[in-house]
Length: 114
Image (tube, rainbow, N blue to C red; front, side, top):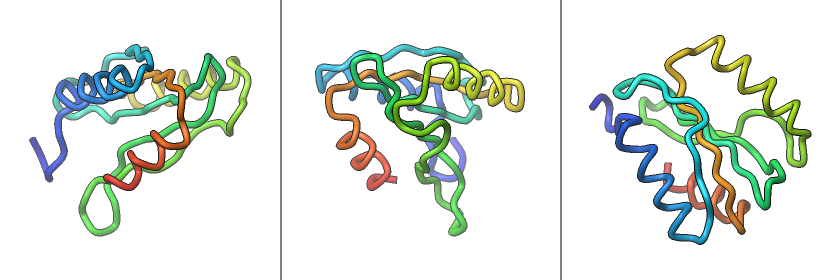
């Protein structure tokens, strides 16, 4: 574990459980490096794209979530193209789709928690 960041092999299952405890569904779209891969969350609600989050190293040296990717209500082809480009750039990337009832709340809570 480096710099206070959980390795993706632990963080991803925790995010999936969090979504499931809120009545949602989650699936790993791409499994990256278990120790050091970046984590990308594609947040949907009832199959409609809502937004993306990625854990990044902040200016202060700590990790935080930031919004990335296509805008809300993007078509599935646009989301797929974004994911393909990201995977090409970073093969160690973990991509997780979360389909949850209250995506605004989930994103706000996640970004606030760092």
